[in-house]
Amino acid sequence: GENVEQHPSTLSVQEGDSAVIKCTYSDSASNYFPWYKQELGKRPQLIIDIRSNVGEKKDQRIAVTLNKTAKHFSLHITETQPEDSAVYFCAANPGYSSASKIIFGSGTRLSIRP
Amino acid sequence: ETGVTQTPRHLVMGMTNKKSLKCEQHLGHNAMYWYKQSAKKPLELMFVYNFKEQTENNSVPSRFSPECPNSSHLFLHLHTLQPEDSALYLCASSQEGLAEGTGELFFGEGSRLTVL
Picture 1: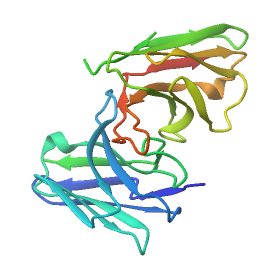
Picture 2: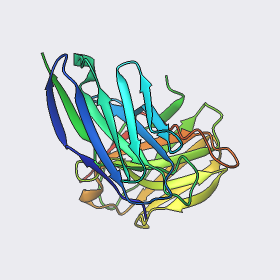
Picture 3: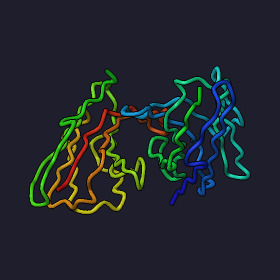
Picture 4: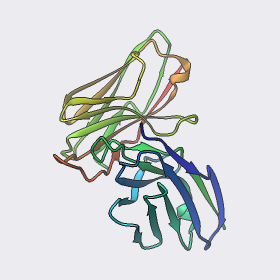
């Protein structure tokens, strides 16, 4: 089945700097890659997603890139702010199923230093 | 208010007890999910229901028993649990199309379970 690896497990960056989180997946048939953000004590929420027919997608300070050949995708946050502190989860859908049966990575705890 | 509500928010039970977690979604979605979140394995998929039919059982022990009476309600029945089952149990819903859904999961706030 699908396996999603996520790195690093923790990340600390200075406010205003950029943060990058990387994930790899194992199922070459996967075609949907969402990213979820979970603030402390709150529920996970979708922040951005990308499908396999594009290589990059941006939404303000957040961007995601996808390399299908290498089976890896990354989340980029620019001009980080204190409210970006949270746990971020990447995910991928197993190729045999519809889009929402996604498998999550282990999470990255991002801390923004003032 | 995200449209997915879970009760109870906190539950403490002994290993011989029987309890249930409840999830209700008000978003008109047709798929519902149970996820387990713990320090060892964050966001681990347990069960998937699509149009009230269970379509995924991710090798979950039989002491966890799901029930989906309709597309708006999902239960997780718990019996003879172990201390290692202590975790946050998250319910989620999504809208699935015939070929492919949007993929967005809407989570509830979770039920924090402690097994003594």
